[in-house]
Image (cartoon, rainbow, N blue to C red):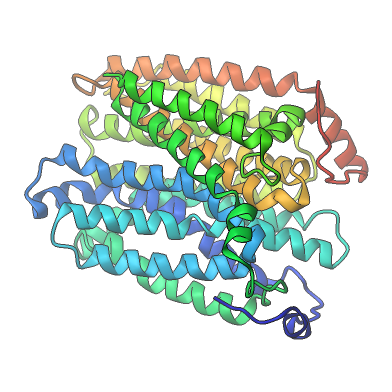
Length: 485
């Protein structure tokens, strides 16, 4: 880690005419994309991995859940570490861990080694987004801006939203051209490029980390809070992943650890999970819930519809991946359009309407539907993903305290992962016997309920409406005021 002192770091920080130019944002966009793309690129490699390792295909699902579980815990933890030790340092260490995970997975000879590689990749890629948000916040403050240009936050959203949708396509190409090991080894050149970019183009962190007593470091990062949060999330995700056969012991353990965590965090001087902030700043809390529910709907389509296309519609994994390309492109296009506007409320309502419309359209799909109808449904969810990712990210930036933006950003991704795991649970229940049109209708009905809920909580959110008015008039301060409405 870089341990240069404050004076040297300040002296070496360049004064640039374009504070958010390509050199500043490029490594962060790449780093932020590594986590979502690794979450989906493995999908088309599972069958080949099972054959190579001599295990049933069902056992390879642990390669998906292990990254989800690791990322759900590591994202806010990486944010807290960025706040304490510097976002550039954490970003660089994360990239090195990704590099190690890619090499380990690409040379693995058994399933446990692959699981270890996915855990490493989950740990390393979790540093990208929260450290990038903190770097952006600090750069905006340094140049006297209340908030960064919309294109910067939009770029982060594109890196996260679009790459999830094209992940299966990339995985299919890699497996088809090479073999399943390419799904791991692709991380090596990408991580190497991101590391060199960050090392050369991102200014050193100005704060010192040497000379701190271990006890002070543990207190500052609230290690007990991190462990308690990790225990709560682990037990909860074990319960969700076990459905439709509930592990009630896991749910009870999650509730018990959560109760202890809340008690501890309410007394902690520097809490990892600021319970008081979440209770007082309801606008921030609603942003987390809204984001998680929207991701749940998007991932239900990403996973459920993909399974249905292959098993019920008779498409190959490669063909199914190609059908998802328009979803990724529209997600990126929507994110770019929304990022150029200051409004928050209307784009979030539009995203909820797109999701509800896509859910209703899914209800009418059958195994005999033309491919163009399937593309149209996924396109609606692409618009949902692009619009909601940018605006929820902007809402988080405005509502979270400046000194907590790293942890807050990581927690946003955690809610997204909870949504994605819930989505895999829903598709597992709907298709528990076999994948058919009846199961897809059940998925559509659940999606309609989620869409209605997101639309209602967005349309009647007075704080969002007020924020939209302030942004339109140019008076938004981004101070993150609490909201008790």
